[in-house]
Image (tube, rainbow, N blue to C red):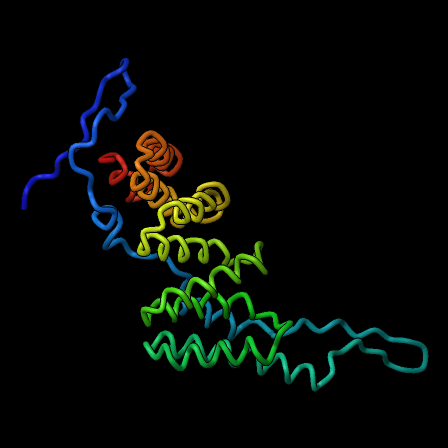
Length: 238
């Protein structure tokens, strides 16, 4: 394999460099291909579901002559438990690699529970299941629906990552750059691992758009803000 040819650089001062002329541009896949995608931990999610009640009951209040208790009706409790069951079934099936069954479980949840509390999680994992089945358009549809309907959901940053990944594979670098930019501005203090991926892939997308200066800045910010990340050393190359 021939050695990589890097763009020429012009030194403009002690610590400033500018790309002058591109000799041989690397394919984007050579930048990000093989990187491990960050996902929520299914095992931890299942454990969380096991110990967390579906709804929080209110404390019992004593009223003169009778007991009053603000409880959820048995029917609603049953519906909530059913929604949770569909969500958990989907996670188990996904974990075992049975993506078709996982998709079926989450589609059922989304259809039966339009106001359900697990819709955001189901949309995210639905997108991941479709991605695992090499159906990027369906995956992107689920990711974008999660982002649009639940912008503050705990899985929304992961949906941005997944969407950006799909855009990279489609060579839609402009859309990929926008998706990864969200991760560089919204999650660094919350999830450093996810943020470091965001910075690295954001730089990769900018590089693919021939925006070398902006790409260099993204890699520089990764090294400065998340220096403990394993990707910080990789960013030094770019």
